[in-house]
Image (cartoon, rainbow, N blue to C red):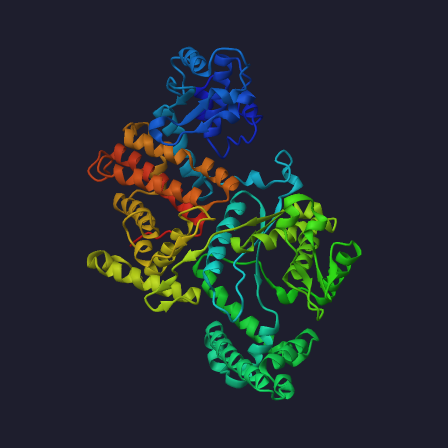
Amino acid sequence: MEQLQQQVEGLNLNAITEFPNCYPDVNPLDVYRAHLANVLTEVTGVDKNIIYPALSWTQSLDKGDLVLAAPALRLPKGGPKPDQIVQDWAAKFPENDPLFEKPHVHSYFMSFFFKGVPLVNSILPTILQKGKTFGTNPSLGLKDPKEPSAGRKKIIVEFSSPNIAKPFHAGHLRSTIIGGFLGNLYEGAGWDVTRINYLGDWGKQYGLLALAFEKFGDEKALEQDPINHLFQLYVRINTEMTEEKEQIAKRKEAGEDVTEAEANSLDEQARRYFKKMTDRDEKALAMWKKFRDLSIVRYKQTYARLNIHFDEYSGESQVSESDMADIGKQLEEKKISKEDNGAQLIDFSELVPGKEGKRLEKPLVRKRDGTALYLTRDISELLTRHAKYNFDKMIYVVASAQDLHLKQLFKIIELLGHKDIADKCQHINFGLVLGMSTRKGTVKFLDDILRDVADKMHETMRKNEDKYNQVENPEAVADVLGISSVMVQDMTGKRINNYTFNMDQMTSFEGDTGPYLQYAHARVCSIKRKAGLSDEEIASADFSLLREAHAVNIVRLLAQWPDVFSNTLRTLEPTTVLAYLFKMTHALSSSYDVLRIMGSEPAVLKARMALYEAAHIVLGNGMRLLGLSPVERM
C-alpha cells in the first residue's frame, strides 16, 4: 500500500476509507478504484462518491479490468449523449497515469486496464504476506466498522438437519454442502457464526423404532453402524405395520370386529410408546437418547470428512411441549389462529391482504388430538433461539420444497409482534438432485455416496502407475478427490437449479470438475517442490521482472479475489467462487509453457515462483472457503 501511495501523488489512505465499502488494508484494488474515482472527478466534474460505486468489473480480461457506464453517473438530462460524452472524457484522461492505461471506449462505456508493473509490485507482496487471510475481510462482520469494540454481528446457520434412522438423502447433502460454505463465508467476513444441526429426532416414528429394536434389534450392530442398523429396523417394522393395516382393513370389510386388533396394532403401540416419551418416561427416553447419541457420533465422523462441524446439535425433541402450548395460546388470543373441526389453523387470507394472503394458504398449527405440528414447533424454536443468541441474522438452508413453510413461519412470527426477528431471518433454498444412484444401486446414505465416488477416483488414479506410486496415502487422496467431485458438482450451478447426479462426469479430470480443480492445485505445489525455494527467498523476488502478458494476466485475476469474496457475501452462491477458481486454473494452465521455472535465470525463476506461490495461496483460500481440502500430491 505504501508503494502505491508513493506512486500516486496526493493519494491519502485515510481519505480513501471515506468511500463506502472501501477497505484498502485488505483489498489493494480499493486503492485503484479510489485513485480512478479521484482522477475521473477531475475529468468529468461528477462527484467521486458517485463514481466510486459505479466502477465495476468487466466480463473478461480482454475487455479491461474496470468499466464505467456513463448513465450510472446520473448525468443531467438534455446534455450531450452518453456515447459522445465518454469520448470527450477519454480524451481528457491523463496520458501518464501511474496506475491506469488510457481508457478504451465502447458505446457509452469506458474500460480501464491496469498498468502491469505497479499492479504486480503491489498485489504479489500483499498475497504472500497475508497468506491464508488474503481475500477475507473481518471488518464486514463488525457491528460498527468505525468502532471495533462494539463487537461482531451474530449469525445462526441452520443446515443439514437429517432425520435419525432415515436416509441422509440428496436434500440433506445439498443443505450440508451449502450450509458449510455459508458458515465459512460469514466467518471470513468476521461474523460470529453458530452452526446448528436441527435433527429430525422426535415423533411417533421413534415409538415405532423402539418397538422394532425390542423385536429385532442387535446391540453390536447398533454400536458399529447405528444409522444403517436403525434404518433397516425402521424399514422392517414399517413393512410389518403396512401389512397389518391391510389385514385389519380386510377383516373390517368382511364385517369382523377389529377393535382389539386395532388397539394392539403396531401403529397404536407406537403411538402409546411415543406418549410415554412425551410424558418423560425414563426407560422410553433412555432408549431414544441412545439412538440419538450414537447417530450423532456417526454423523460427526461423516461431517469431519466434509470439513464441517456444528456448534450445536439441536432437534425437534428439544422444543418443549409447554413452549408450544404457550405459542398455541398466543395464536388464539391474538386471533391469528382459529378452530376448524377441533383443530387449529391459520387462514392467512383473513390476516394478510391481497394475493400474498391467498398464497400463504391455511396451515394447521395443532391437530384435533392436541398434537402440535412442525410449524408450531418451528415458531417456538425460532423465538427460543433469538432469546438465547440474540442473533443479528439467521439463515435456514432448506430445499425449495419448503419455500411455503418458511414463508408461513416468518409471517406468523411477524403477526405475533416480532417483525424485528422475522426481518433477521432468511431462507437459502436450493433445487433437487436428480438421478442420484451409484453403481451399487440407489443411494440411501451420504457414506454410500462418498464410498462410491472414492472407489471411482481410486480406479482413475491407478491408471497412472508412476504418479500413483508417488502418492503417500492413495486411499486418503482418493477419498478427498471423491468428496471434491461431489461438492464441486453440487456447487457448479446456481443453488436453485436442479442438477443430475452424474458419477462419470463428476469424477472426470476433463472439464470444470472437482478432480480437475484439485489437479490444478497439486500442480502449483509440484512446481514449488521442484524449484526448491524457501518462502523467504520467494518473498525477496524482484516482482517487476514479471512483464509477460501471461504473468500480468494471472496477477490481474489474483487481484480480483477480495472482490469475489465480498461479492459472494451478496450472492450467497458457491458458484460465484467456483467460477472464479476455474477461470484462475485455466489461466495458470495456459501459462506453464511460457513462464517456465526450471532452466530460467535465478532472478527470473524466483519471480515466477512468487507468481505461482501467490496463485497457490489464492486457489487454496478459495477451495477452503468452499469446504474442500486442497491436496498437494496426486
